[in-house]
Image 1 (cartoon, rainbow, N blue to C red):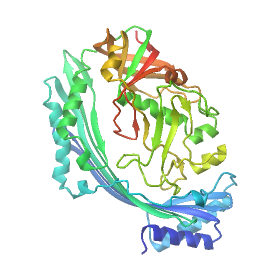
Image 2: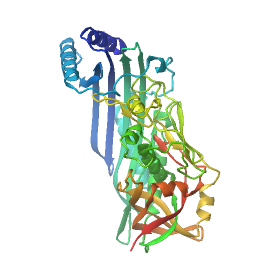
Image 3: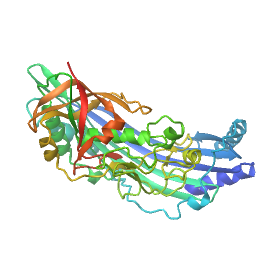
Image 4: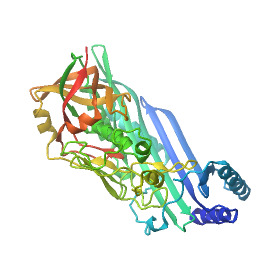
Amino acid sequence: MRDGPDLLSDLLRRARSRGASAGDAILVESDTFAVQVRLKAVDKVKQARERRLGLRLFFGQRSAVTATSDLSADSLARLLDETCAMAAAMPEDPAAGLPDPSALAREIPDLDLYDGSAFGLPLDDRIALARRAEEAALTADPRITNSEGGEFEASAARICYANTHGFQGEYRSSSHVLTVVPVASVSGQMQRDYWYSAHRKLAGLETPEAVGRTAAARTVRRLNARKVPTQEVPVIFEPEVAASLLRMLAGAASGSAIYRKVSFLAGRLGETIASPAVTVVDDGSLPGALGSRPFDAEGLPTRRTVLVERGVLQSYLLDSYSARKLGLASTGNAGREVGDAPVVTATNFFLQPGPHSPEAILRSVDHGLLVAELIGFGVNLVTGDYSRGAAGFWIEGGEVAYPVEEITIAGNLNEMLRQIEMVGHDPVLRGRFAAPTLKIGRMTVAGH
């Protein structure tokens, strides 16, 4: 049986002979492994291997998407029959279609995204990574009295893509994540927090001991938390929670949200939407980064796109479909599950660092809140209204005074972006979204 791009191209040739005007196909082979330990005992181990093929065919402006995990000749013949029949039954969509052939990737760069060494380790060694991390957390401080577990996950995949414009490409990728969630208690009060390390390469992870010690320190610092009265104050977001603001910004800047007019950023290209201190970039071409890929789910090259430059909205995130809807060009941000049509997806989405140290940002606040955790999803991307449960630390005289909990922070993303007064120099691209420490001039902190 032919493999990879050749298998896909052969399937597409047969589709063309059946009358399809265009089409593309994707093949994903993946291996995943995960182990969770709790209080030193193995709680869960799972390993899975999967091979799936997705087919999208166009008959003019009618299209359908199908998928299968059975790659036998008979199964692929049935898949082809079913996809053709489904496409014929669909209504026409003027925006449907493949990208222009001239826009397709001409080179497939090696972005150093793959490391399969985790799957070569004995099972006991993989379990030991989770055990060592949890053990480091449990022994870091006598106030760490329990654990919700330590977990190690590894995944590796081969992604092949082909379309009827003659594009063929494939690449391999991997990811590794080590997580610990300790529980601390004192005088009957309990707190939990977590820490994690994520990297394309197994050797790029923080040591299990470092992950465990950081998780313990973050947990212990939350003991003896208090409530605070409702008030308006400056709010500082630690980098991990500041990154959540970027996830919302990416959602609001998604082409699909823009053409549906369900985003507060619709129709605002060229407008000032944030503080001049804010520059936001999406870059899928960064070597070794977790959101990187050499081409997107439509065969377009990934690239560096500046969405917000010194506060001005310069671009949206676009795949071919949303770009056609808006009369713009794709930014190479098509992502795709095997059995679905492409959708807009951020790659490595980050706010560029500013000049301030986290300590200087803290010292600039006489009376305010340092946010360390956000809870829930109280954000309306149509209006920008923002309200989320939070926990963190109260600031008095430029120093952390005590931990706080059971509060809600509220504002509007339009105003929050404009009120970013200080940007830290401390971003870490730990996942696909990253931000440095951020200070917002004023938000409502609702307590008791």
